[in-house]
Amino acid sequence: MKGTSRFATRNATAAVLAATGLWLGQGATARADDLKAAYAITLAGFSVGEASLSMSSTGKNYHASLAMRLSGIAGQLTGARGAAVAAGSITGAHPTPASYAITTTNGQASRTVRMALQGGMVSAVEVKPPVDVFPDRVPVGAGDKANVMDPISALVMPAPHGDKPLDPAGCDRKLPVFDGVARFDVSLTYARTDHVTLDGYGGPALICAARYTPISGHRTSLKSTSYMAENREMEVSLAPVGGTMLLVPVRIAVRTMFGMLEIDATKIRPGGGNMAPKLEHAQSDRSKSGRTQAGLVQ
Image (cartoon, rainbow, N blue to C red; front, side, top):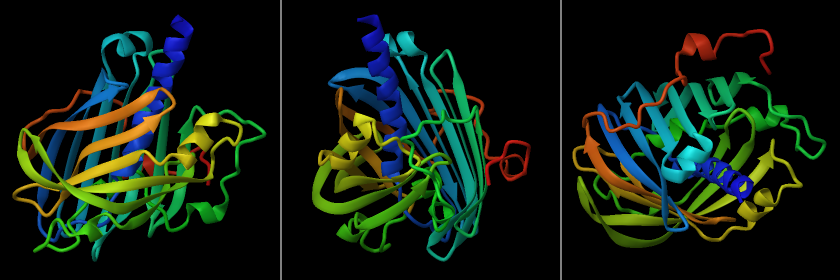
């Protein structure tokens, strides 16, 4: 049972980090917006961890960071945690990622991915240690690194229309994502409008249905890949936050092979204080992530 539990919690961690790809949006506001949010993570109704989101944007640049760690029995079994950061410039209504970094660990081993981008093109990526080579892993081609976003840069999500922050168009988008290892699409479509209540916000929210489409970098033999590709039980709830033009993810629900994974906002603060579970190692320093080094995959 111990091995099964450890396997489940490791996969739950992967699901949490993959779910962050559903928080994707496009753009940034023309003025400075700062936001901090705290989240509770549950799996099959049991509390398994916490996460935090921090982002700021101006008319010229943006910075976003995400931190997650498992707690309780899940944390004791795996020690799993992760932290990611990204930065870039803003062109019109779209972010132009420049750097991205993420570090994940399960208490026994860790992996760091650093990536540099120019004009939507991946110019360099480094994965340490490299992912294992398997014959069923779909190769990532050069075209899979063009016109893409990293999973964190798109977390700065403005309302599509400033005077109508809850326009259903805020859901309707197809997002091409490359995380340094895998290329996939996340498609969001409007499902309904609902009411949410949490510390810092109470009011309507857009409920977006989400679909995941693997493109490359994934293993075809894994049941989890086909399961997520066929998954119809994925939703993202987006709400406007007072004082900003941002639509913020206040709830993510994803059916996994181990039960429903839910990431629920517990507190949101525009320009608020630190609410993050303190995690280290991931950096968005462009000079580090954009520098060509030995072992760098082009």
